[in-house]
Amino acid sequence: STAVVLLTRDLRLHDNPALAAACAADRVVPLYVLDPSLADLSPNRTRFLHQCLADLRENLRGLGGDLIVRTGDPVAETIKVAREAEATTITMAKDVSRYAVRRERRLKEEGERHRIGVELHPGLTVVEPGDLRPGGGGDCYKVFTPYYRAWSARQWRSEAATPKRITLPDGLTAGRLPAPGDGPGEGGESAARRRLTSWLRHGIGEYGDTHDDMPGDATSRLSPYLRFGCLSPLTLAEASRKHDADPFVRQLCWRDFYYQVARVNPKLSTEALRPAADNQWRTDDDGLKHWQDGLTGVPIVDAGMRQLREEGWMHNRARLITAAFLTKHLGIDWRPGAAWFFKWLLDGDVPNNSGNWQWTAGTGNDTRPYRRFNPIRQALRFDPDGVYVRRYVPELKAIEGPAVHQPWRLTGLDYPKPLESHRDEAVWLRD
Ligand code: FAD
Image 1 (cartoon, helix red, strand yellow):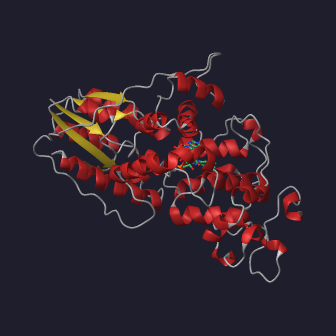
Image 2 (tube, protein in one colour):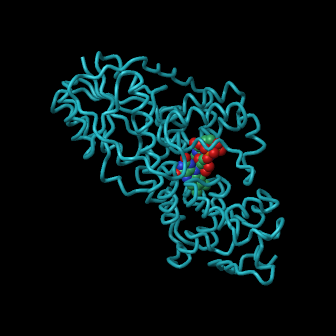
């Protein structure tokens, strides 16, 4: 028998339930379809993806197999390959986005037409979205803490076995992979494993104390690997539990939390979870552009926005500060903000990006939607000596210590004045 495994956001050999299930057949076709409708989403992410695919191909070749690559509509191409290989089954990981759900539905319909079974497997989260439901009814948990309790108490599935050998059917051409090219990050399962090993050895133990230290950069930076599935979230969560790292495991639960929110809110990236909180935004193209370019005049915001462009990644605290600055200080809609993050972040995905943006903008299910962020207080607390700002804002390199956070107090500096608040002059500017 022959099975095709359509790989999407699970670009790995370890703990890959869809791949393991396909390996029950005598011959397996690991397939990736480059979808031109997604091609121009993000230069950073596209490069990272190509690195992931190159690494996966090499690892599959090491097992005697290959990564079969096609370009076009994923459903049509998958069916075409399945028929060419005379496969009876197609397996893939179940996803939550609107695009992915539609792709799954179409694949099932087409599979039925050609008498090819389509099986959906877990693998993109620790606990499957939809597996946990709140006691009082409802499709998903809206508040994190009760979700975390249920998630922690849940028996997680067992990790899927890593295949030892892959036998391809005869006669399939492998297909060309785009050249990975240069850019931020290093994609792929091999790089993910190296990062995981060093994180478990050197980082995770201190995470509870250091995760908010902006210059220390002491978080795992595993998010891009989770985004592309180079690292199984379950493998990571299990390993973290063994290290007794509750604060870190809790963060992994936030990721699952937003997936289960996204599953029942397919328009999470465009529609507010609480529409009543969503009607007061200003259109301010100039303000938006200054924010995107890291030229707001508020160094902690500018540093974060420049880190995003340079590294395709931003510290979580910087994401909070910059997102709050756009929505609460400038009064600009969270949607263009989220779209900008989505464009540049290596880890950009709809559930986490839109979920966190809505939380920050106060349109989500946050229990304190009117929370305001004072960026200077944040800067002095989480970048007390200004090291993070000087790293990303070279114009301010010569200013020593925390004074770098308030350049408007200094004379003779060529740095833009802070953009004004949409409501009133912010208190922190007068301090
Ligand atoms: P660590 O601190 O090492 O955490 C480990 C893992 O836990 C992360 O890789 C991530 O998978 C998960 N995690 C941590 N914090 C969160 C969180 N608040 N929400 C969901 N999962 C979390 N994360 C994304 O993966 N993709 C996004 O597109 C994204 N957009 C964001 C937008 C905004 C406005 C904000 C405030 C946060 C966003 N986050 C997003 C969440 C978080 O900032 C990143 O997951 C984290 O900074 C990634 O770095 P890390 O792997 O070093 O995290």
